[in-house]
Length: 96
Image 1 (cartoon, one colour):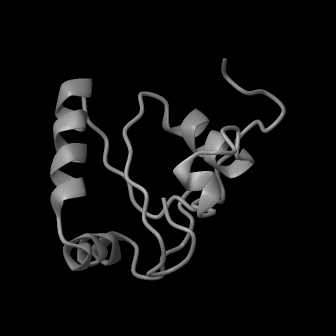
Image 2: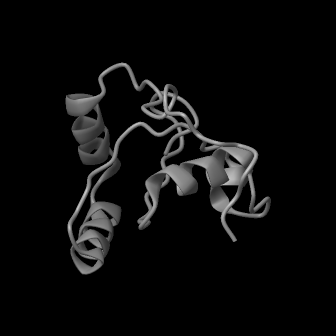
Image 3: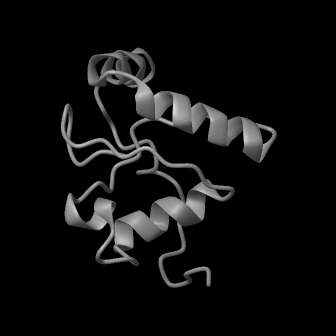
C-alpha cells in the first residue's frame, strides 16, 4: 500500500486481500500506520498458497532497502496505479 507514487510504503500480510484493502481505504483502524499516512492505494501484491510462506516474504520485503522495494513495485506497476481501483468492493459491509 502507498499514499502516492514514491511516497510512504506499507507492507503487510493478509488472508483476505479484498477485505484488508477495504479496511485501509475506509480507515477502519484510525490510529493505524496506514490511516495516519493515508496509505490507501494498493500498488503491489503477491499471492501465496500458505500463510507461513507469505509471512516469510513479508519479513524479507520489510528488510529490503527502499530503492529495492521501489524497483520491484515499478517492474509490475510503473505508473503506481491503485490496483484495487476497479475491484467490486462492498463498502457497506466490513468483516468483524
